[in-house]
Length: 228
Ligand SMILES: O=C(CO)[C@@H](O)[C@H](O)COP(=O)(O)O
Image (tube, rainbow, N blue to C red):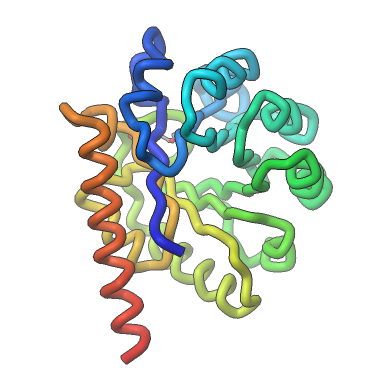
């Protein structure tokens, strides 16, 4: 799959969300961080804001739920207009049932792992998912430094996806920038969330294009090396 860029509105100006969403039209997704002050020590936005954003932009919404009890709340984000809904496995009671419910309601189902959560116990769940998110910072805040100790987990996950012959997308989120995106692509990630690297730039749309180009080049270098 061609690399995709998902700018995180956590780094946008929340008083101008519609304009900030339009500023990155051309991105593949708009990443919406939902935080509840319980699963993570930060509070952002909920279903009504997602409904408004879905009306304000043509870019599909990639909702990342950093909340307790996603089994209860995630379906409402599909109804609010999200094209992809990510829940944390650490918070979900019944991840298989929840992934099936998200898909049945018409969105892509995605599961996230905090940095200390290994992928191996969840290998059998992968066919139930459309995307797996590997956090490359502790969730909760934008602008943190990329955890390069996550690179082996990204590689192992890409190998598991290949072993099972799955079409699963592999997303990375946290500290993704011009300095780190190539390492992530080389390790096998194909969906890149970037907050401060996009909204901290003077031209966010250009930052998206530049990140995509870097990811494309790194991906084609990596596949050339694997094929030779
Ligand atoms: O989920 C999160 C943080 O918990 C992210 O989506 C951040 O918003 C990414 O921001 P940067 O690290 O790219 O600034």
